[in-house]
Image (cartoon, rainbow, N blue to C red):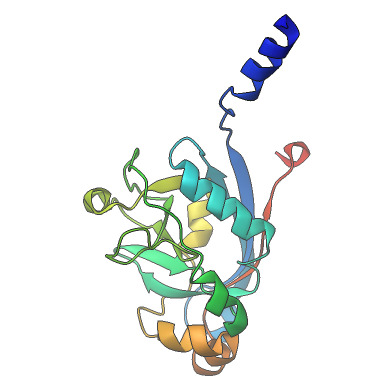
Length: 202
């Protein structure tokens, strides 16, 4: 009887939240010349306790390879860099509907912090992300909940992402994917792969 009660107690213990890291291998363009194309990487440290729902959803997307071979399509140096739309229209059609619940904002949108993008509608976070280039604390009250941060000198790589402004059309990205982006915006920086790092790699 005592053993059964102990087993039941353990079963209902809350699962401890732990940090994990995701490495993004990217190709950036430092300037506007195709001769200045560079490859690099940066690591995101995800703090599950900051935004558990967002962190779990991000992990799921990374494990599915959602961010592999995608483009940075919205870049505003005085604000942030945005990405997360699939290069495959068939994937976008499904992924855009896989939204998650809103959650409390526990930490502010500081430079280097990563957050899910969303619309003004409740519970609208899906796959799009942005990394803050500057202190965007004004977003805190709008429900943008950071769940991780760029580690070390990774922002040096992030700041080399090609500045395309807001020219790429998001509807066209969703309907035509990388075909549209590579044809109309060949200089866009791209994510080659995103993967969760094992403990042995830290």
